[in-house]
Length: 440
Image (cartoon, rainbow, N blue to C red; front, side):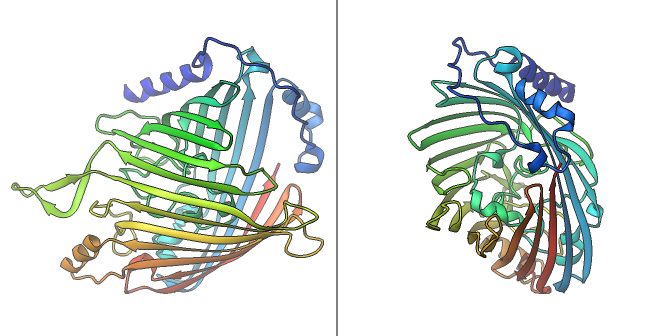
């Protein structure tokens, strides 16, 4: 019943909207239509894309294929092919239905390839992970499906529906080049909650409000505390089960970045689950685990460090991110060698350079490093079980994204995983691979 109720609520939000009384002013000028014959492999579909665009509908089809090999260290040598195909539909509801300053966005993806081999779990054993499209399941599912209404000259926006928090929270665009997961959702927050926060591949029912003016912004979101169905990773599951609780995230920041030109963003954030979680060690008088708050905070910044004189989009940029999470929480066992460590903090930083070589203006080179720190209580709990855990895991990635065509990119990479999963029985791992990305 809860599952059906949630679907009805989502359907109603998307179709009927969250009404504001006033209409918004029309934009002064229309955005220039994309050149699909240049930017996509399949072109304008005989004029269909142009016709849809004039009506306010934009359709994007993308595919990523990752070829990875663990050449040494970790659990064992091995290789996989991982893939993710996606369709995203953005609808300007002012053009479609006369709903002023209203947008509907729907995103559906399919994970395929050798997903069931669980490359990281079987071959590498990294806590932070190896690949940001690895899910361990071949399935298709709705990732996001939300409605957004703007007001106050687009300074204020309210969004509701199926939502991924890392689409707007804890985000640095410069780190998006890298394939390892902690450069999307950070290593200390990714394993929190009963089924993780709502990040790839699962969104959750949510309400988000944002206010932005003169570069400063404040945003907050309240989501279902348990995205999807922890017992069934196949298909789309929208549930509001008793005991799920909620996840709340608040972020304050300053952002004057210009897409495709420059980066200038600084932000701080706080997050907290309403449902409590078991302590790793401490118990009450009856021998039951003490229940603790699951919460944390983060800081991030990114900058253009050196822009080339002839083209400000080219040059050197960098990012830094740091986050802390509850140090006492039992994170459970996802199947890695000694279970998943309770990480109380992680930090990452990286540099990217667009147009490093003459004649390759759209190519981007990068290097990034993330360190995840295991809490003292986790290491004490491991000692009690007869295991010795390292205090941290460090992952490094070096990569180069070659934009061969506007619709085609190839990205070779090398990763070094030091102290995988803080497990002293695992040797440092070397992973090499390549990503192929196509816009259809």
